[in-house]
Structure formats: C-alpha cells, structure tokens
Image 1: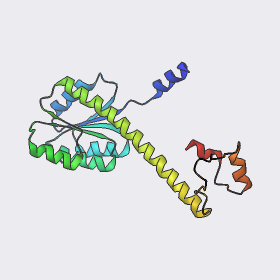
Image 2: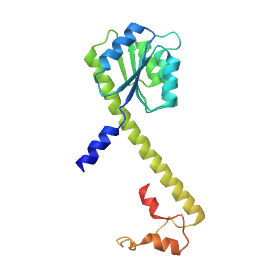
Image 3: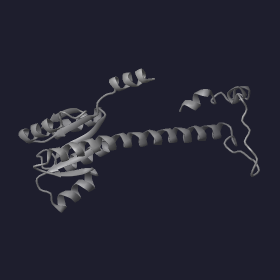
Length: 200
C-alpha cells in the first residue's frame, strides 16, 4: 500500500500558478519568491495570455497585478472566474484603496489582496492557501457533478419506469435488499440498472 501511495505522489501534477504583471522586474520578483514552493509557475506580461492559459488548463491560482494597461487585475480575475471558477485569484496592488478592493471583489471575487511591495512570506502563504482552497473547490465541484448525475439518473429511471424511485413501507419496517439486486434488475429487464452505478 505504501508503494502505491509513493507512485501516486510521484505522478501527481504540481498545482499550476499563473503570475501576470506588466512590470517585468516585479513579475521576476514574484516568480523568484515562489520558485521554491511545490508548484508549477508560469509567468507572463500579458493578461490575455494568462486568460488563455486559464481557459485551456487547470490553473490552481492566479496572481495578478491590479494596474495593467490591457485590463485591470480585477477584470482579469472576473474573466478567470467565469472561465474557471475554481481558479483562486490573488491581486497585488500598489494602490490599496477601498475602490480597488470593491472592484476586485465585485468583478473577480478576490481571495487575497496584497500590497506592493509585498512581504515574501505573506505572498508564499497566500499562494499556498490559494492552492488549498483550489483543491477544496475542485472537490466540491466533483460532489456537485456526482449529485447532478444521480439526480439525472433518478429522473430518467422514473420517466422510463414510473414509481421506481418510491418505496412504500410502514414506519419501523426494514428495507429488504436481496443479495444480488443487479440480477433481479436484469430479470425485470431494467437494463439501465447495473453494478456500474455503484461506482458513480
């Protein structure tokens, strides 16, 4: 069992963190600060390039400057939220005003705001917390998808076999489930009911 865990850990992809800033020197500082973390870092001077990566790949965290010429960091975060809601968004800003905060929250549901110049440890901590939050959001979206599949299956079965999802029993009576319900389903020609359903 331990060998399997080691193999799985070795093949897991590192969380992808996108860093975007129109100031090349500041972008380099952000990347240097994060390069020892257990993440894959990709950096760009272009908000459009960052958005392209977010739309085509599983991006865990977006670290963006607020004040950029192509679009603000809040606008980029808003686009990122619409394209990939589970990507966690962090804004770096030299002008931490109430207006900037409101803009970031309203457009991009920002996870953290950090002042420039930033404290290295604070940035690393925010990115690591963002990676953790991304994993939580991915797990929740997986639960939601399974729930939606279950509900769709239940609705399809009810449409095809009216009354199948309702069980009449008196209070206190146990449910009786046979040892092989899948064979009974096949005998009743309920071919949509197979053991594969237990795996969803």
